[in-house]
Picture 1 (spheres, rainbow, N blue to C red):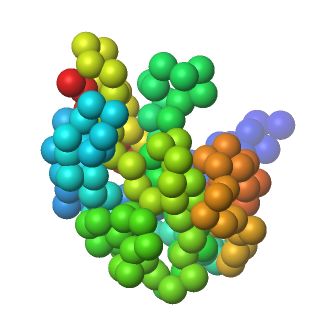
Picture 2 (picture 1 turned 180 degrees about the vertical axis):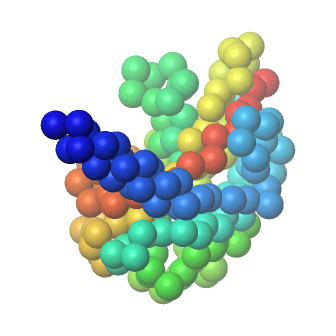
Length: 182
C-alpha cells in the first residue's frame, strides 16, 4: 500500500511539473498589474484605444492540436461575468499574437483563426471598462491547448458556447490576470 502511495505521489509531482511548463507572457500586460489605456474599451463611458495585448506562449503539451485565446472578466456585475475576447482554431505552430490582433476583421490573426462574439456584441476584442467606483476587476487572459484542430465556432458564437467547447477539449491552459479599475 505504501509503495502504491509513493508511486502515485511521484506521478502527481511529475504531472504538475509538466503542466507548469505551459506559460503565457505579454509585453503589454502583467500578472496583477493595472492595464494601460491601450487595453481599455472605447465606449460605455470608457475612452481607451481598445487594442488587444501582445501575447506569446510556450511549453504546450506535445499532443496539442490547436490553441485558443480568451479574455474574461469574472468580476463584472452581471451574474455571469463578461467575455471580452474569444479566438479559436489558432494553428498549433503559432505561439504568439501581435498587439491589436483582436480588432474586428483583423489581418494579423493566423489563417483559420476565428473570433467569437464578445459581450459588447461583436466578434473581436473589447477592452476593459468596469463600472466607475468599483474595485479593480480581474481580466483573465487564457491560452488554451486543445486536443482538436478545429472547433465549430463562428463570429456569432457566444462566450458561453466557446467556453463550453474549450472546456470539452482542453489539454492544458496558461493564464495572465492583469487588473483595471476606474
